[in-house]
Figure: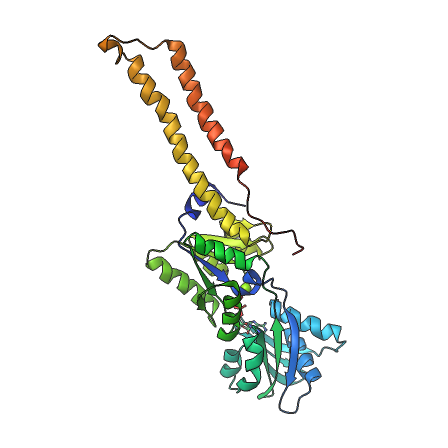
Length: 337
Ligand code: ADP
Ligand code: MG
């Protein structure tokens, strides 16, 4: 869904497309894989404490943890003093124990040292790791994987072929981000950045005179979507993102980013052709009707021919515009998403 003609015109001038990772390049339906426990906790403890702390959070990672705990039949504990830090994690008190959950940064800011050697192998597989601190100690980690969208690789390739630079922006850790970037073919990655830093990256690119489009699902990236020249949101994105975006991917398909740019370029080309056809008959007909040829012994223009030429210019403009209906958007085979 393209919100207006000015948007359609602007899209073909885009230099860079910024992609959020979670929920944009990936399906945003993360699943819990490995759960590892440290400091005398059990794996079930880790899942129970983490799920209890995430009960109140809307983050996709939180929902994955809660779902995994529910599937295991784990009984949740009461949560108090809950606080969410966007782009980092959550804090809370579960069954009297002080819980910190989230990225490496989140635990570092709580003064908890993680076992980074244990995390390394999960990270290189592109997993997102959620670390758990309990009572001031490193209690465990949860490796969470998210499936990359099947059309992501083709989308990136087509953008590069059009001369548009794809960039990834993510709050996730650099190792996981790079693994996903490598798979889809993105060379420029900004990882481990906070939501407001995503906006800064957009501003910096704009300051260089580059026209930017940002694609996101609105979870933590709504400000960057609004800052970019063209905000592109998924149809199932948060309301604020859909509201502020210039283009909404109602089919929830990344290839529609490519389609929008192609359609925009064709529409602009069509407008220019139509300007030509609108003026061509007139530029020819009016001087003849005014007696240009007659002055040199040639004919005058019959008014009927003038009327015909007038109609022809309208007909050719309309017919030329209708050719755009034959434009076939690129698609991949239908899936449930
Ligand atoms: P992205 O930019 O890829 O959409 P976010 O900005 O939402 O990611 O989150 C960045 C990182 O912060 C996550 O990869 C995770 O490590 C951590 N994080 C944020 N919120 C939570 C949460 N509720 N539970 C656990 N970890 C979280
Ligand atoms: Mg996101």
